[in-house]
Image (cartoon, rainbow over all chains, first blue to last red; front, side):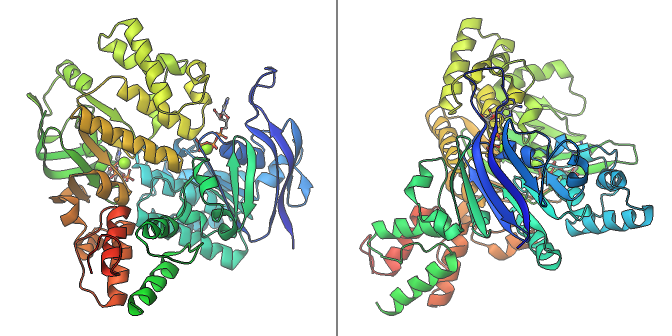
Length: 281
Length: 290
Ligand SMILES: Nc1ncnc2c1ncn2[C@@H]1O[C@H](COP(=O)(O)OP(=O)(O)OP(=O)(O)O)[C@@H](O)[C@H]1O
Ligand SMILES: Nc1ncnc2c1ncn2[C@@H]1O[C@H](COP(=O)(O)OP(=O)(O)OP(=O)(O)O)[C@@H](O)[C@H]1O
Ligand SMILES: [Mg+2]
Ligand SMILES: [Mg+2]
C-alpha cells in the first residue's frame, strides 16, 4: 500500500538555544497508508499540535525526517506537498484570511491555481457539506464558535486534499453537528481514498479510527487499533486520558457484581450482554 | 446575586446589511447560588446571551438585571464596572482573553484591576497556576507559547483569581484533555458548593449538564424554549430532537436497554453511577432491589 506519511525519529524543540529546553516532540516515528484514519490522543501539552505543524511544514524538525507522499519534506518541495493537504487548526480564528466566508474558503483554492468556475463550485459544495451555505457573505470573525469551526473545515475540504489533518476541529460543535461532520469525512474517505489524521480529546471519536497514536510528554506512548490501545485501561487514565463510555460503565457494573466481557468498548456490545444477562436471570 | 433577563433582544450590526438578530424576547431567571446549564445547537445564541451577564453586550431591547444593577441599551459603560468584578466570564476561545507578556501577569491583571494588592494578586496567581495543573515554568512563559489546553487553563485561572460571585463559563472544557476536563469541572462544582458561587455553564456536553447543573435553559434560534431541572429536560428526548439536541449518553444507553428489555422508560439516569445502579437494580444485583 502507498505510504502517505512517514515520520522518522522526529525531534523538535521551540527553544533550540536553551540547553535544558524540553522537546515538544521527542523522537516520534510512525507511518500512514493511503485511506487510513489515525486518531492522535494525549494530554494537554503532549505535542499533538506540534506534530501537526511538523507534518505540514509549518515547523521543521531539528532531528529526524517527515516524509510525505513518498518524499522527504524540504523547503523546496514544501508548497507542492502542502497543496495536497488540508489542515484545520485548533483555533479557527488563526486560520481565517478572507473577508467573507466564501472568500475565505476560496483563498487556498485560488493559491493552488484552480480555475474560477470550478473554484466557485467547490466552495459552494464544501460549505453545503458543513451546512454553512447560507452564510456565504458573512464575516468569518463574526460567527458563533461552532459556525467558525464548520467554515474552517469547509476550507480544508474544498481543497480536495489527499491528506486531511484535523486538530480538534470539532471541539465546539454540538453532538449532532460533530456526528454530521465526521460522517461527511468518512464518506469522502470511502469515495476518494482520503487519509485522515484527527487530533482529538473525544475518545468515542477515537474509537472510529483505524489506528490510535497516544502521545505522552512529547513521546509516542502507544500505537495500535482502538481495541489494542484502550485495553491498556488504567495506564491510559494515568496519562490524563480516559476510557470510552462502555468501558467506564462496565467497570461501574463490575462494582455492582455484574460481570461483562473484558474489553467491551461499544455501547451496542455492552447492551447486548446486559440483555442476555437479563433473560438468563 | 439573582440574575434575570426580561424580554431581552439583541441584534448584531443593527442597520447594516449584516444585521443579525441573535436573541428574541428572552426571559430567564438565574437564582443566586444556582448551577445553571445552557444548551442549544450551534448559533442558537448561547454566547450572545452570556455576554449580557457582565455587561459586555447591552441588550438592544429589554432589561438585564444583575443583582441590584439594571442594564438596558441606555446604560453607560462606567456603570458596568462593579458588575465586571462580580461576574467572571471564561470565553469560548481562550485566546480572546489572554494578552499579557507572561502568564503570571496575565492572571494577576484581573485582581490588580479590581484593587487587590500586588503581593496578594501574585499569591493568588501562583496558587491557581498550580491548581489548574499547569506545568512548572508556565508562569514565566508567554501565554501565546502554550498548547491549546494550557491556554484554556490559564484563561480559567485568570477568572478564578478574581474570586467572582458569579462564574460564567462558555464551553470551558473544549480543548482540555479528559482527565483535565473532569478535574476542572469538579473544581468548578467544589467552588460552587463551598463558596455558594452562582455558576452558569454553556456546554455541548449533555453529560456535564446532567451531572453538575440543578437548572437548565434550552436555547433555540435565539429564544429560550425550555427551562427546568435536568431530570425534566432530559426526560423528553423527542422535544429535544426538535431543537437538534440529544440526551446524555447515560440516558440514550438507558433507553436502548429499556427498549430491548421491554421496560417502560424510567426517570433519566443523569450520571454513570446512577445508570449503573439502575441497571444493577433491574438485573437483581447491587443495591438489593429486585
Ligand atoms: N509557540 C510555542 N512556543 C513555545 N512552546 C510551545 C509553543 N507551542 C507549544 N509549546 C509547548 O510545547 C509543548 C507541546 O505543545 P502542543 O501544542 O504540541 O501540545 P498539544 O498536545 O497540542 O496540547 P493540547 O491538547 O493542549 O492542544 C507544550 O509544553 C507547550 O507549552
Ligand atoms: N459579532 C457578531 N456579528 C454578527 N453576528 C454574530 C456575531 N456573533 C454571533 N453572531 C451570530 O449570532 C448568532 C448567535 O451566535 P452565538 O455566538 O450566540 O451562538 P452560540 O449559541 O454561542 O453558538 P456556538 O455553539 O456555535 O458557539 C449566530 O447566528 C451568529 O452567526
Ligand atoms: Mg494542541
Ligand atoms: Mg458560542
